[in-house]
Length: 253
Ligand SMILES: NC(=O)c1ccc[n+]([C@@H]2O[C@H](COP(=O)([O-])OP(=O)(O)OC[C@H]3O[C@@H](n4cnc5c(N)ncnc54)[C@H](O)[C@@H]3O)[C@@H](O)[C@H]2O)c1
Image (cartoon, rainbow, N blue to C red; front, side, top):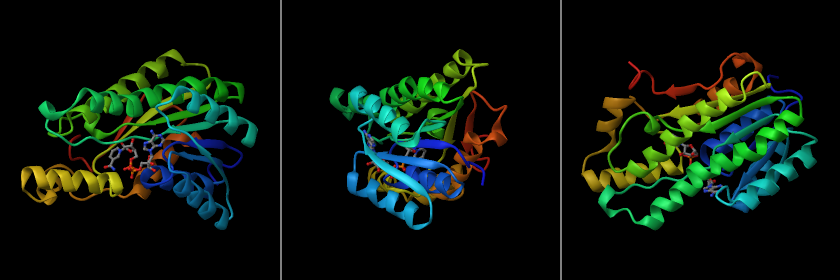
């Protein structure tokens, strides 16, 4: 088991990528706090982990609220007896032409995707240091590295997450705490489905054309979880400040 004896916290773990990450970490021996704004979904993930023989707890938190995240990390440390891994995964999409974006929409996506990651790092970093060290993984996106029409605000948030992660890797270097980011292309989740629907509606072309040009097929949440596992395990011990792109060479090549 690759995470035996580790305590992990995953935000946005009630669905999609966060759910797959929480389940995989538990399968690999970690004790996991599943956090989400959707209590029923989060509790169901906890139950699935318990039925599979793992250990998990649910804590409700909206990552855009500092007091929620402060409480989340404090409660996770208490429940698990320390913290070694935090995955700041919760995020939302916003699929619209730039000129139609409202200030409120811009502020909301920044609050969840950027401020949420800031709060997650702000409270998890000292907790992990106090527990003897570990890793923080921030969920960015390939959209933080390349342009994608209709996703300008989302791209801006993910670019910010990548830059923030790299800066923290420098700030914490030599202190037993690594920071990395994951940058998947389109993943087969509810968020991915919503993007596909809006993209096809707006451009009037099937998503298969974009997939063919950029990544071949949708990535599965389990594939993302496998890479998350690598980045939080000791196997990636010298990987710090890295933004790992999952694109099958589509944009890296
Ligand atoms: N799906 C993709 O194609 C894709 C690609 C690259 C990166 N990502 C990123 O991966 C992360 C997860 O995406 P997903 O596809 O699993 O999304 P999803 O919509 O399928 O699931 C996201 C989960 O986050 C929760 N959530 C939303 N806002 C929250 C908040 N303010 N506080 C706490 N929880 C909140 C939701 O309730 C949901 O359970 C996001 O950061 C997303 O930007 C997704």
